[in-house]
Length: 477
Figure 1 (cartoon, rainbow, N blue to C red):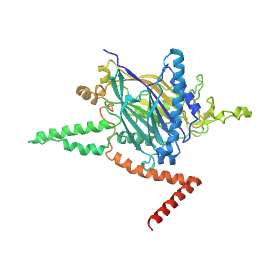
Figure 2 (figure 1 turned 120 degrees about the vertical axis):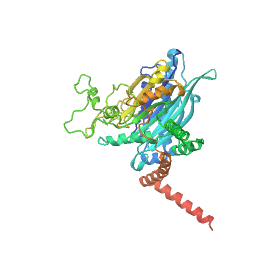
Figure 3 (figure 1 turned 45 degrees about the horizontal axis):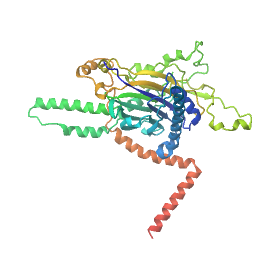
Figure 4 (figure 1 turned 135 degrees about the horizontal axis):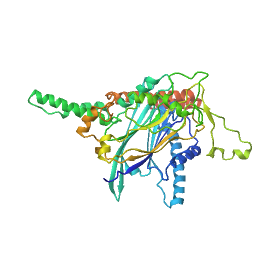
């Protein structure tokens, strides 16, 4: 059997704490991450962001968010350029730089897609869902779906479909059930087409029959068609690979730590080494119980909890000479400790849906192969550490990922049922309509917040208002 080609994918998730990153520092960490267990640049880079900007700017949208996205784009380009230059010196081979294919956001949650060969990214779709207060996007998820086509000599030699989800679930220890509910909202509402339009379209596909048996058979057929159509617009589309990254906010406990609580240690010799705390991880427990992240896999966690960090103050420059170039310094080593009022937690996670068993049998046991799963060092702008996953994704045609009829029937009898066979939650038919209505309010809320927070913005607002009123008065004379 011919070996299945693979796609080299790098995914990073980061809660930015509503602040801009230091580009040189972040670029250095990305450069080191690119080189972990690898000697070449990944073909695709996906960055999942949470609290990427202040809420007011995030609600206003792209105009206000562009400077924040641009800083990550610069960091990726700097890291890639350095990596490619060193690779060229070592091997005489130069990797292509990255092109930013797209950025999307729902409120403060964003996603960025970079590709070394942007022409290989085709049929790009996006979607979003909010589940903050009143379903606004202070918490939510944004998704991208694409077909990646690898070509040689102008012809496609392999292609596969990929779905990426960037999410920020409910915070606080005691909000475990709400986090699970947020996941239900993602499964039900993060859909890549308007489910209402699909439902309206399906009845037009029926045919007339002369007897009741035929009508009953036709009704069952239409039900199967409807279920398949809705399944295909969900994140669990059977013909697509799925990756979920974000600040999922699962903690070690439903209550805050006591004053005498024992915290995880980073010392491997300590009886309180962080590895011993993984058994208390809410995400692992809830996933095993079938209440969240259904069917998804995660690489082994070998890094300490990524939240909540207390950062030590930056040492002051001793001389004027020390201050020169300080803003461009990429060697900022950040010392940190745990915040004592929160249990440390592996809040920042990246999970994936492995190749289904029926497709493994047909493709010679093709599976996701993890290259690295780790956290980058702490940065001074956030109380989270960013987490990255690099893996080799089998380039399997979408139709080859689909189950045969016999595989479908066999999977239905298993527990738990693979979510590519049966969705864990039904699709919300009102999801697109509801999100469109909420989104209209977010821009108004954003501008109102921005104006109320800034004297300069208030001045600009009233200047524009007076000019508008003056223009109206002049034209109405």
